[in-house]
Image (tube, rainbow, N blue to C red; front, top):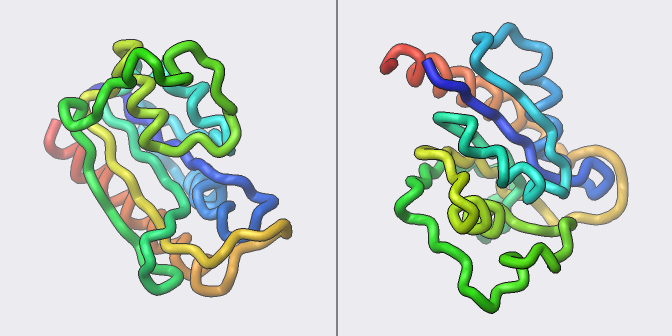
Length: 163
């Protein structure tokens, strides 16, 4: 079975933006198959892009703003062929962009451009309230954390059974 990465994106010092790292912290306490790596990538997720081809599946966990009710969980799947490469004038092609605040779309586009995009990626997002400096998640986002942990464990089990 191929390697799997579960990557949490976000800033634990910006309220609900710490959703991804909170999920990763809980997953690290669980017994996981040895082919599964769990990593808090913080706000510098783009540094992960050059290594993504080492994984058969990458599961990203991130805070999102889609206009839904705070605490709503979204799951989407992204196939490598659906991701657009960066244009030649895009600053990310020359790594002259800020590592902070780089979104998942940019990370995957950069990975595709440099030839390291994984064949399959899944995103678990949680609708958050406004982020502000401060520790801790809002009550609705905190409730979503164990739910996403269980959904990721289910995903890993299903994926393992398919192999």
